[in-house]
Amino acid sequence: MAIFLDTAKIEDIQKFHRMGIIRGVTSNPTLLYQAGIVGTFDEMKKYFIHMAELIQPLPLSVEVTSNDQEEMIRQAKEFASWAKNINVKITIHGPQGELHNLEVVHHLEKDLNIRVNVTAMMSAQQCLVAAMAGASFVSLFCGRVNNMGYNAIDEIKKLRRLLDEFQLKAKIIAASTREILNVVEWLGAGAHIVTVLPNLLEGMIVHPYSKETVQMFLRDGERGLMADVKSKAGTV
Ligand code: G3P
Image (tube, rainbow, N blue to C red; front, side, top):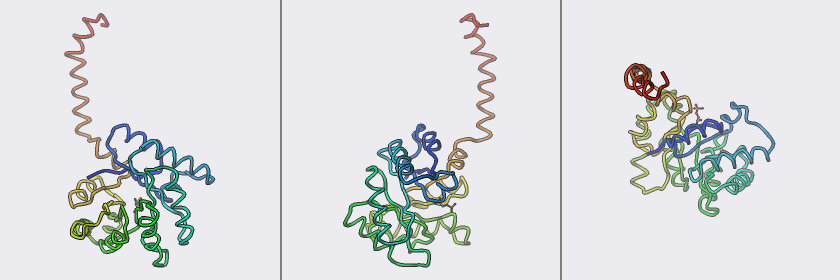
């Protein structure tokens, strides 16, 4: 079970990687755009290589930006050549439900030995077919599943049972986190990984009552033990 960081920002990655609490990073074109990370191809290449180096050997997902079959394969080969720990994100199908994406996934995994994270999935059945096509990771957008009025926990449970039963190698990434609670509940339901936004990860760590308790310890330490230490050191 693992926590990945869902971000496009280097500073977020550095912050949480230094704590040793993340086991991978997922990005997507929207996260990059929202963070204002835009640039030429060469600039983006440098950016992702830097990101991959920072966390290596942990995995980093980089998403293709086209739905044309040849272009997806070209980009996937390019991204995978940047670093050993980069895997390529491909959506389950095209914008109008075009079916060629899974053919690309199968080709990349089987013929080119490129790890693929199939993304933008809303159900256990979509994830199952992506896993059968050979995907290494299947990203179930659990927050969006819940938004549509279904229970993501049921989808995760069903999916995990099927993957185990069919002995498929795909790891479930529960994505599209909305609340801090999601992390523990989705891991508990059987997700191998939950990918978390930086603010939610920080929210998992910081608790108002812990703050109050830490303040109490520091205040009383100053009054008691530290006062004595300081007087012995001649600083008071
Ligand atoms: O990892 C996928 C995630 O970034 C999508 O989340 O919030 O757009 O549903 P959201």
